[in-house]
Amino acid sequence: MATTYGEVEREVHQILANVAGGDVATVETNYVAVSSNTNRLNPDFAFTPVRDAVIESIIEILLAIADTPRYPQWPSYSDSSTNLSNGALRPTVDSLGNNIVGVWGQVEEFTTARPCLPAPLDRIRDYNLYSTTIYAGLDVYWWALDAEKIYHTRADGVRAYFCTLVRPVFNPTSFISLFDDQVPALVQGAVAKMAEKEGRYAALFTASSGLFQAHLAGIRAHGLLTGSETSIIPSAK
Amino acid sequence: MTLNELVQYTKRRLVGVPGGEVWADREIEIAATIPAALQELGAQVLRDRHRRNLLQQSYSVALDSAGIGNLLTAIGGITGTAGEILQDGVALGVVRDAENNVLVWLPNYDDFLRPASIAFGYYTLVAARIYTRAVGVAVTPSLDIAPAATPLTVFSSYAPAAVSGVPKELEDDTISILTEILMRQVSPINQVGIRSGRSN
Image (cartoon, helix red, strand yellow):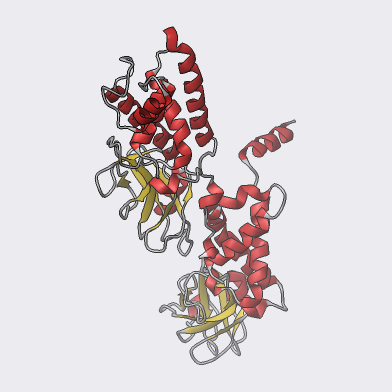
């Protein structure tokens, strides 16, 4: 989050051999300058397509993170829901209207923030059916998603955590929404999108795409939350 | 001990045994078995003369004009709950009429209908009801039976309906009973195996 869009863009142009200049000083000057018709030379790599490729690659990395709640940077992109009652419709946007993406993270009781455990819908239904008779006095913290709704066992409602996505807007001097450790992969992702899969850029595509996809796989390898991480036992209140 | 604590004690005992990990998220299965455990606790304590007193309480039982009362609706003096009384426990306790006469238990209904010493009042348990016979009234035909003075005070054993009704001294027994009942549960696939074995 301390790298600017312009820095990413110029690295992409550098790998694409698109920085104009016949000597070191000129290349150095053109490299750090905001892209223009005079400091870039290859018509295969115009400014806007490169910038779009950077944006798309940022989105791909953000989606990979959003799909991976165990990834250390997941909380940096997460938001929480309003109070969701049992049977409430699943929220599709956050409080700012941004789209919810990826896998839900923790679900917790709204008033106490006690974590809830993912559970089969059958168990949640049975508990709720008999919560005042068979299970009176038993506190369980469970939730499940159906296609459209969330079901849980907490009368006070729950709060869900999830990632949201807003399409980044390219501004050469603004910081990108990714952490700095994502930048090398981001550059490779943008390069892969610019390099044709066939023809003279095929080797470049293969190399950069391989690096980018490996990075995304590395993010996803952190995996989903397990039940044990979000469970709570009745007497642990 | 609360119901949550009983579930937690039991779950941790079960999970702590190799193979018991399946109980880790089975709180509702454990909770659904608690009534059976409490009933078993009541039965065990009733049979234990040294601990019987831990689950005994008095019940006030109103009698109708025929001297018949309903034990199932009687409310316990300690727990304040109806439906807990153990029928076997009545004979191991005391039944007094409203005049403080101790009634004598007649296990068989036909004995209750026969002539008996008028020095005592009597009671018997029939059809989930308590039938009474007043002291000092001679009975030749059964039509002579006069009801005891209402209400009765019945001191009897009971099986607590709620976990909160379990005395402290019996909490560990309750956990053990509940654990044993759950460990006896057989999975459906094993039930098929057992049936197959029997048929062979």
